[in-house]
Image (spheres, rainbow, N blue to C red):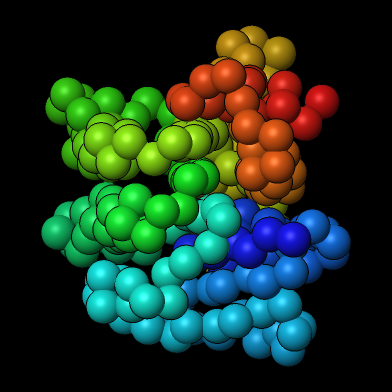
Amino acid sequence: MKSAIILGATGLTGSILLEKLLTDASFEKIKLFSRSSVENNSPKIEEHLIDMFQLEAHSEAFKADVVFCCIGTTKAKTPDKEIYKKIDYGIPVAAAKLAKQNGIEKFIVISALGADEKSSIFYNKVKGEMERDVLQQNIENTYILQPSLIVGDRNESRLGEEIATFFMKTIGFLIPKKYKMIKAETIAKAMLVLAKDGYSEQIITSEKIKGIVN
């Protein structure tokens, strides 16, 4: 029986992943680290409601077989670039360091298509730096997912995402596979497969994420 840690279980992909883990008999304990509760009283869940910028202070509780990092924000939600970087770079890297420190051998994190530490685009650069520093921890099984536009039923409205979704549906046949939108459900399924079976590559782009579950 396995135990898992989820960072970002209140988000779109993280919440779907949590539901899958709850119904998976091979996982007996799911530790959630977040600012707010998922409001689920399953006996499999162990919630840690914390300041996510102080993750290092909770190293004693940060122990499991696998870490799923679904943390992420957007430019619209977090316009302050310093705070944006603390979320999209700081939290995943802190989690990877704790995983290494505590001997966790599997770390799965959602990044983004276009991540590049040398990019002149701030948001791509942040994701690229996160990937670099997560990989530097040399966790035995590290998987970085680079999805394109993630779609699904969100609690909040994202106008830019809705517009992009409309165009992708309209002219989707013209878009190369790796740029096609991807369902959060597909990403969550792939993360569960990676946790159980692994994969031959560490960096996994959108079309390969889809291939894992098809």
